[in-house]
Length: 363
Image (tube, rainbow, N blue to C red; front, side, top):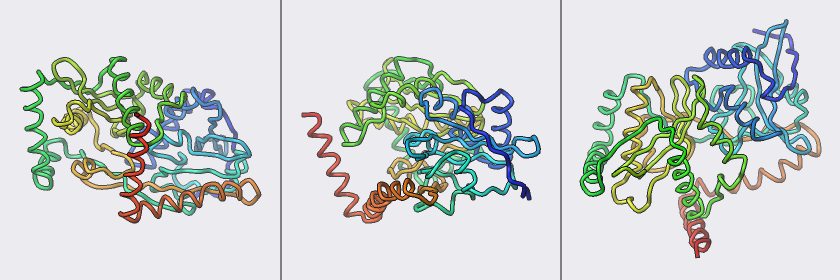
């Protein structure tokens, strides 16, 4: 095991060299079987292009780089996982066997806190500071789509049968159905964003696309074509117009679902369900071995999934007034959210309240 403390330097993601990018992704390949694109060097660089507070701690020992820790640094040393709010996999990228004092890392980064909400399992440096864990439904495609289709027939036969029937109905009643797995159409992406924004507002939730940095991040990633992080827009067309779409990120072997939506006028045809089935099939054909739906409950995820990964939320805090203030501002709210999520009656009441708020917004 490595025992000598590494030397830590802080850089902006744009200052990472081509060798850094390759080494970062090589470290990921050596420490995990699920190469989630949100943990790639390219994702941190993309966030760095739209947020000036993005930094990367580069860890070196005996002249050799042994790790990278991307983060965002706010006021009073309050740190967050890079892309917090939209990133679905978080943590550090470290050499296997590296032993590191997390508080040493915090001091080097001038952080009093580091907050996370999608920390991946296996991040032993930060897991002791997790305060909650959540399922992230996944589809295992290691044995190909035909094997997955057999799984659906065994565990969700009516779901699969209905999806196939809905696609035939859509073609008969609306027009020829066409699917594009990696669509480069800016117009289709704009349509998806408009659908998704309307959905957030309608359900009383904050629209992330109203934040300029998130809108710019999605546009930037849509143009990114790197093996370890590539923006992928999948679109289902009927009669030549988009009826459902999804924008996500892929690596060589993992597709991370991110922003799905559909034309509400055609909801009776379940276009989102048709889209996902087509998308999973195309992903398998393109070398994807795992589709990650991301944290959060939804009936369609339960129907499609073959299992779950775990992600964690929490915060690493040091001693001092800034860390104490962060605790006071965040922990009571987090505990309240956890209470609501764990009690069905409270959760259903919260959903009804948010929908009522969304209805009022549209009046």
